[in-house]
Length: 332
Image (cartoon, rainbow, N blue to C red; front, side, top):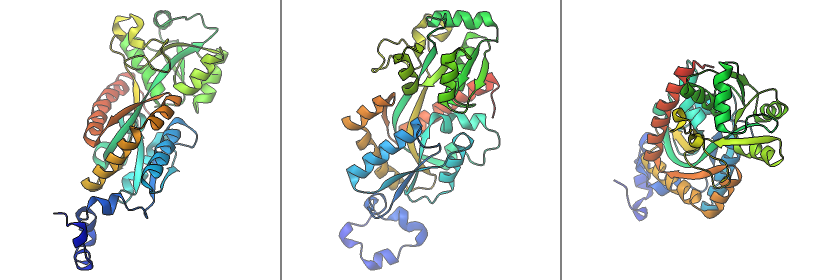
């Protein structure tokens, strides 16, 4: 039972054991301690989409609640190094993980021998955004539509190639899902990042790519790439003239959807009152017009959900992507 604030005298506090104090103190004592810095660990290098969204959330939380939130980048192993760091961190609400579909729902199926279990060792706090991918070809390509692309892939019988920003990324697995649904194979060309992959796509060295939206959209605007489709269930507000993959008219692709979900997670044993308080604050920030307008710049859209809703989505996405990994034979 939580004691009222006025009755938390020295005798009560000293009577609590170190192990139980965090769970027994009222929410304000652990989730709104403005003297305690909160780290949002982004498991990728600075400058990418994950980093931008993490910093946007950290800035919003700091401004709204007066407590210092900072981003700490811990890149490596497709996001697994940063994820494991948070798994091993103290469960006091002061260390959070910026999770997205790649690290949370794809990596467990893709990487063998992980020393942690995402769904057992991390606790979802809240989700706040989702991002589709843009399917693009070079402007000089003879492929003008999704129907053209599907025909070209099927005719190539496995030799049609595509770029990705790295093995195991959303772009890689989305292309493999496309091939699986079409009942064919494609050749994967993995790059070390989005920029070099897009460079070779524009130059014609590779034939197509599922890219994160901002850099690809910029090259579409420059006349160097042609946008064929987006991978969301419905058209995007900032790309209203680009159809979805599901709109292609190809029966096998009728339910196609591939989006990356972003949220924050905490170490497993973080007390429920802390999770609830942090989740409420995250959703409050994510619900503002200022925050959501910045999401659009990054090619993302708001997707707000509490801890239970985020956990359910992680479970659903993990099942989906495990099947794609198995069907494609992909591994890292």
